[in-house]
Length: 435
Image (spheres, one colour):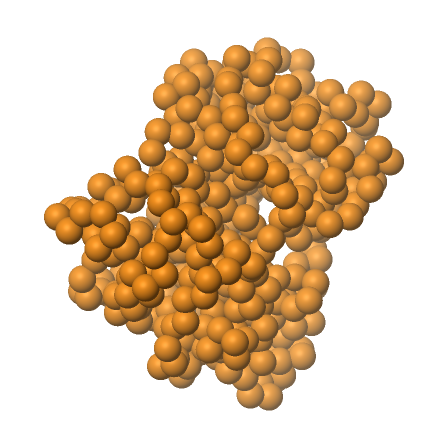
């Protein structure tokens, strides 16, 4: 039995309304060989035994148990039902269709960084047999040797007293927190809610897949003194502002932060994610683009300060302790959903930049990679990842109207960044079927 601690919110909020799941699509040069993919998945499973689990529950809590059932690789492009009997109760699934491999993942198992480690291993083993038996495994978690750093939960160590967080500089934390809150537009109330735009009608979510030259994008980012995540977030804010000239609410981006570096646990298997908020306020609006990008980058650096992040981790540990003390699953669900609701209304859109795919020598066989994440209460979510000389953007929204997507593309064009729309269609994420 493995106790669920730092990923508990995902388990206790998952349901029909909240999938708490995502899907990574990887397109290779040729049609996928199902037999070879099944063999690659079986080899991958040996490298990641800590993901070979199923969710169980008693009256008090959810917990994880080892899962020894076969991992069935299905030939379908439909998102998986994670945790279901048809998936042998696994909280991840590998499927394929035509030239695409899909990694369906429950966020309570791991985040995008953890999923990408799995995918790197999977693609390495597949390409090793499909394309080149001499393929190097450098940079890939191959073999069966597992580092202790992958399995030790830093939150559990903090909560149990095995690990002590540094004593916070109270004045510094207070000052930084105040600045971060102001940068996030908290002093102006709720953020602009794109759902309330009368020009759009919230229907079934859709997505656009875009591709941008990595060389062109990085040259542009260097000129603008910004990272890809910062620059793309700023472009989305500028588009929203231009399309809402009479708006008085804050236009706020939510940006995901990987907490592993702050926790000094770069290989941890779980979902240590934070989020910071960047407001496109009057101070920013009055500046030229380059100055805007510099200001956004500075605000993100401030929000990513290690001492500030660890103070947040300390608060999270208090929350997890309180949740663990609740006597029933229902009580834990109520607390988790209340926490989730406290974040509603804080963002107008979300940007997540995973970084480089880092698939080693196997990356030369990759044509395209996209990450489809749950939209939740956010009107727009932009997922960004780089592979094989390109940035791949997944632009997902909760309506069919192209208003904001076109506005975003117009910002790309205005900044001289070329792009290609690879596909458009329904936004598909797995669902979680917990006991």
